[in-house]
Length: 210
Image 1 (cartoon, rainbow, N blue to C red):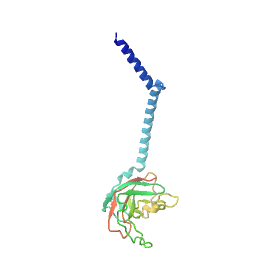
Image 2 (image 1 turned 30 degrees about the vertical axis):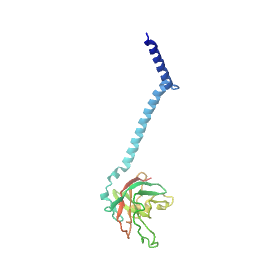
Image 3 (image 1 turned 180 degrees about the horizontal axis):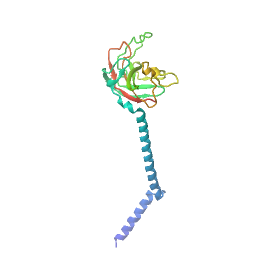
Image 4 (image 1 turned 60 degrees about the vertical axis):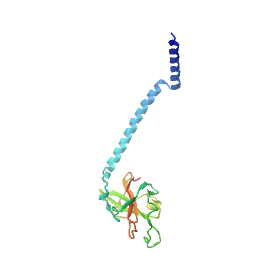
């Protein structure tokens, strides 16, 4: 007989606890919310799959990148020591940057430009792109000491990044497409003589053309 009041008290406390937890929420709302959530999750999953499929179908052959098969349009730096690590990179319609650990550390080279022989240069920024099934590498521009970015002057005004800046056939006629994979890296001066006292470069990094 003494257990009955305790049982009733326990049931009352359980009812109050449940009431506080579900206050203001109709019993069916949680069920409906769960159903909606499951539906949204399935939809998102389908969307991601479609995106991957589209990207793969358009550039599916670009996974054949092999540094041993690169055709070098400027100095072949494939055997240069990799002393710098790329820590970040991006392309947009106002700048292109390749951040790396040796920026400002490589020796300056003078005499590159006859019109400005005292202008110091530290290295070159490169692009590797796929044209007609082959991967070509060419220097993109010179980098001043500590430089890691090229700004709006790296492409024709109003056109965004484009092939006219790469200056070596066939990249000079290459028209990059949005979503196209390319590779970038930096090196000590490698475009033309004089090359400088060190022959070093960074690792390669893949970027997606904007």
